[in-house]
Amino acid sequence: MLQMRGSSATVTLLLILFLSILFISYITLKKGEEIPSVPQGGDLAVIGGTTAALISALEGAGAGAQVYLFSNGRELLEDTSFLVAEGLAAISTPSQLERGIDLTAEDFQKEIQEKGKGVAEPLLLEAFVSEAHLFYELARYYGGIEFDSLPDPAEKPYFHLSTFPGAGQKFQTLLLEKAEKAGVIFRSERIREIHCSPERVQRLILENEKGETFPFYIQGAILADGGYCGDIFSRHKYLPQGNLISLRPEEKGEGLRLALELEADFLQTDYLNKKILLYNPFKEHFREFSLVKSNKTFYINGEGHVLPGTVSLEEIADFILRSPEGKAFVLVSEKIALGLEEREYFQLINTPDRLASFCGLTEPPASAGHFSFQSSYYISYVKVGVDYTPGGLSVTPLGEIKNGEGKIIRGLYAAGEITGGLHGEGMLPGMALSETIFLAGRAGRSAAEYARR
Image (cartoon, rainbow, N blue to C red; front, side):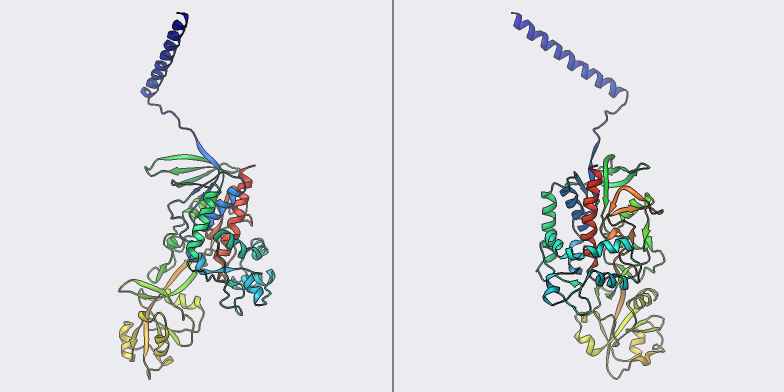
């Protein structure tokens, strides 16, 4: 009997407690107050879906940090095939040793400085070349492929290509598997803002697919969403748009925007990696021109100006950009045209009048004496493509982002094409992937160490 009374009292108390909770909830809702959600956060946020982002996340997780990766609207690893196809710049590789090539770190540094006209940041460059002997093995570790070919050992002993079929896809697959196994947490929200206290990074403002925003508290963040190729005109408003094509339109420079809102320093803004493209205006197709510089080529525009193909790539690109929109052309001899892989972009020109008509001129160019019509020529439309933006954020050799006064923004790091400082006026072939491997690894480990203090 006593046991039954005890059970009844317990039930009564539980019922009273339940009704009290309902009553409090009702009063709260009546007042229009929202019950606060549990704050979200972690040690380290990596922003971007690039190769640099995945390597940073992998290294950060390997260093013990809880890592969240926000692709920020980009497809994961969409730049990997591009980077792998562009090759690897490295020293002390098996391919070099087999050929007896002794390329030292000092030699490599000199090559980079000469190509960039001495503009590279000294500390960043020294740190980069000090690890150049590791790039070959690191590329094999991250992506499972070997850069075993030296296509031009005499002129470019540092430049390697991979002969592995489907190298870019294999690199993507293995790197993604490694990041997942390391415990990287992938999130779908977009980053709207990064908030800092006077001392350090504090939180992100995320936006979900419903358009709702909320804070995400972090100790550190790595910006690694690529360059700003797809948003090139907002940073280089002086560029004529009619004869320029962005070869990587997916790169909108979102990470760069986030950093510049925090007054980060932006370096080498006038340097762009340009390529000359043959262009079909009727199908809007384009393809890189393999015979850019040659004494057998001439560049012509709709104003009747002629430029010999023996000048520098920069001069050729400038000539095309400053030509009337859609009125820049390249002329090659019949013998050369028939041997080109890009033959389908060319049309036959067999008289001076036909040349004038094609270029929209009332008469042949005044300097047409540079070429003789004793034999036929072939002509194609040309444009300039931009596929890499060497300019970017100013960083330390650990990937720490600096502001305009040269001070470090605590907890904020960068890796990959969003960074600047290594290239200058020009960049060596293979540097894009090497720079990614170097700085993403350093940023990932450094940011993890900072976040776990």
